[in-house]
Structures are given as structure tokens and as C-alpha cells.
Image 1: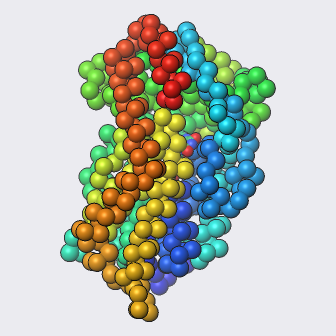
Image 2: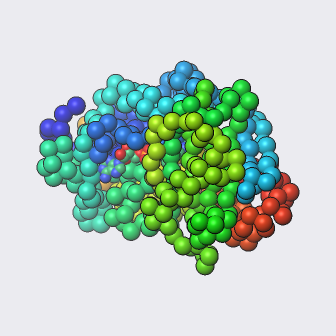
Image 3: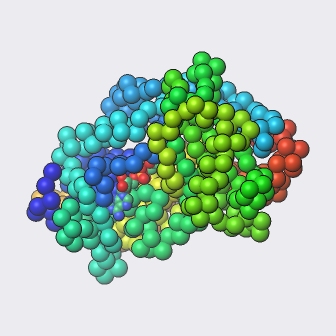
Length: 416
Ligand SMILES: Cc1cc2nc3c(=O)[nH]c(=O)nc-3n(C[C@H](O)[C@H](O)[C@H](O)COP(=O)(O)OP(=O)(O)OC[C@H]3O[C@@H](n4cnc5c(N)ncnc54)[C@H](O)[C@@H]3O)c2cc1C
């Protein structure tokens, strides 16, 4: 991997997570030049999602049987616990094709495939801002691994840089309205018996339920068994309704971690898992599942993809597959257009004004919004928003949620 002589690529991909690496692999398979610019020392430097259902796209990108080969554990279902753990509702899994694996093993495979196809991956290289010429984004400025600011140009710029996307923020995307803060924690020697507890557990906590933090937003504490006595545990704040609620105060990071510490020590049911356990990893981060980014083409020449577009299945907070699916669509449609525009020419270079004219943008967007995957994500956001309005805003507190648990159980069984 070298940083020298890099000037023009068909696809400039900001961020080397599942979205960016998928885009680079598809572009390279289509015969295009792709560069991934990644700020970390390695692509996907921090662990994020480590579980997903099986989808043919994973095999297409990473190879047949790969996900199966890194699978640690397949769970059998979900259990939702009402506030205070007074009631629960078990929801059996329809199929056993849900896998848990280590983030590093998952991402390393993307890197291997991408590098095998000749994708350039620039590490320790942080994108600072897009470059615009005549209202088209034609490149990005980035700080390379020696701290020098460089410019790089291309036909299409993909913002695959996650939940705090520098590309999205440049175009005024309000990630504070898109993201839900989440604590990700990995523990070993958890107080659990994998033979008895194979389900994913979700503890719903309403606003006003915690004596020590009465204004804390509604949240969900979760426990995922990932093999033996190892667990992924965490806390996700649910932000969809919070900005409309007078009883909620948006907490600082420190306040979130204080609540997390207390939940680990004493929350009915949930804290049991921590007895005698060792914490191997713990970090507060963000998951963009409060709402989708509507303006995912914020300027001609640039597309926000994956987490930077809030493109996750919000009910399961599943973004691995969906970021890959969005990357596939946009790389494929732009590759086809680039090929069409280059017919009869020896080199694919600067067709940006044609590639990104308003007629073409309208068509790409229409095609995207007609895909099953886009419709699915949109539908889940809409259903989840109604569900959360009912449970977390209308019912709000433990007492009132527990009173209507029968109805809430029914809705959860229906698929939320
Ligand atoms: C705690 C947690 C648990 C999750 N659990 C699941 C799960 O079980 N199943 C599931 O399907 N999904 C899960 N998700 C969601 C899933 O991880 C994401 O949706 C997915 O990683 C999105 O991929 P992405 O490529 O869009 O973004 P990311 O994976 O965030 O990748 C973004 C990349 O961009 C890089 N970057 C950022 N800024 C810059 C910059 N300025 N310049 C260069 N590079 C930059 C980052 O270093 C990173 O490598 C979880 C997420 C979290 C946070």
C-alpha cells in the first residue's frame, strides 16, 4: 500500500467499514479504480456489529460459507423484559441462520478480498472535507499518514464514514437527531449458562423509571450470549421521541456512563449477568437508528452510504447487511452509467457533469427508493417510530407500560 502518485480514482470511498469495503470490492470487480481512505491504523478500527442474519450478499462479497466459518454461536430467539423485569415475552427465532462472530475476523476478510482485487487502501488518512467544483463534488481533502494535506479526485465520492460522517456534517446533516448513543461492552465469565440462556435479552426502561436519573431518556439494556460465558451487553438510548418529550433531558456522555455503571450493579434481571464477570471492552459510541438521512445525495457527486445515511434496520439495529446492500446498489448503478458514458473511449475519466446531471440524479434516486431493501428500511423506521411513540411517550413509565404489557407483547410478537 503506497500513498504516492494517487490522483484520480473512479470511486473515492471515505471510510473502510462494511459499506466502504463492499463498495470498493464491487467497483474493482467491475474494472474500476477504487480507493478507500481510512482514518484508523486498520480498516474498521473499532468493533461495531458482531451479529447478523444470513444474506446471499455476504457470500457474494466475502465468499461462500465464510460467515458460517467464523460463526461462534447461533441464538434461538429473543426475550423482551418489561420495565423492572416484571413481565417478559419470548419470541422464538424463525430460522437458525443468525450468526455471531468477531468484528476483526469479519472486517479482515473484506480487506483481504479488496486488496486481492487491487483496491488501494490508505490507512491513517483522515478525510477533512469534500472538494467542490462548479457545484459538483469531485474529490476530497485528507490528511495523509505523515500529516500532509492532500487532494484526491474521482468520478464519485462515497461518504462511508459512519455515524459521525465528516462528509455528512459538511453538508449539514444533523447527526445528533439521527444517532442513538449506545454503550458496547464485551464480558467474559458472565453469570450465565449458555445451555439455558441462548436467547437475546432486551430490558425496556422507560423515562422516569430510574430514581437516580429521572430525566434519563428511554433506553434498552441488552444481553447477547456469544458463546460459553462470553456476552455482548450494552445500553442503547432510544432517541426517536426524546426531542418531543418535556420530561427528558439529553444526557452528557458522563451522565450516560454513570447510569450504565448503576444498571450493571443493580437493575432487576440485567445486573445478574455481571456477577463475577470480567469486562474486556467497554465504549460509548453511536448507532444511527433514530431516523434515516433523507438527503443522502447532499450534493452532486457524493452519496452517503451505510451508517452515514442512517441506513440500518432500526428494530434490530442491524446495519451490517444494510450498509453493504446500499453500497452495492450505488456502486452498481454508477458503474453502469460510467460504462455507458465511456463507450468507444479508451479511458474512463472526467464525465462528472454528465454522470451527475440533475436528470440522472433523479433517476438514480428513484431506482434506489424503488428497491425492496430501501422500502424495507423505511417501513421499519415508520413502524418503530409509532411503536416507540406508544410505549415510550404515551405510556412512558414503568407502571403504565406494565399495565399494557399484553398489547405491547402482541406488538413485539408482530415483529418489532
Ligand atoms: C454497539 C453496536 C452494535 C451493533 N450491533 C450490530 C449487530 O449486531 N448487527 C448488525 O447488523 N449491525 C450492528 N451494528 C451496526 C453496524 O455495526 C453498522 O451499521 C455498520 O458497521 C455500518 O457500516 P459502515 O461501513 O456504514 O460504518 P462503520 O462500520 O462505522 O465504518 C466507518 C469507517 O469510517 C472510518 N472513518 C470515519 N471518519 C473518517 C474520516 N474522516 N476519514 C477516513 N475514515 C473515516 C471509521 O474509522 C470506520 O472504519 C452495531 C453498531 C454498534 C455501534
